Length: 99
Image (cartoon, rainbow, N blue to C red; front, side, top):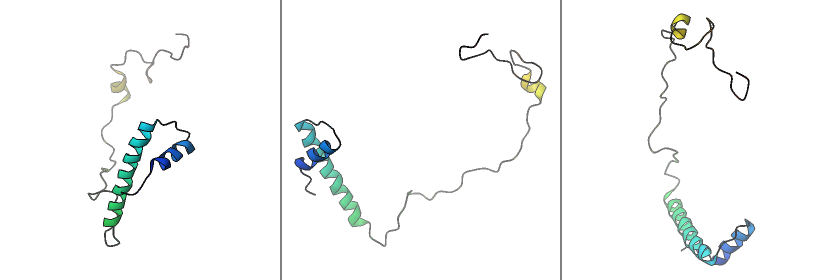
């Protein structure tokens, strides 16, 4: 056990201006003690000969080449539009404007 006490938890709660009940202090004392013990175990295993990693699996670039493909003509894009002015879609006004 790392020795986190209920008094330390209560003091930290007071510094953070968190009102904790005695039951919450006891629960947090146990949980924080377990967290500190777990970190200590990882620290003991993480020796200088173990390389630091951010991901367990090596990452590689997953982007594809940006290649221009076939696009719609203006007429094709507007053919199924409910309303257009020949070169743009027409939509009703929004945000409380008059329609």
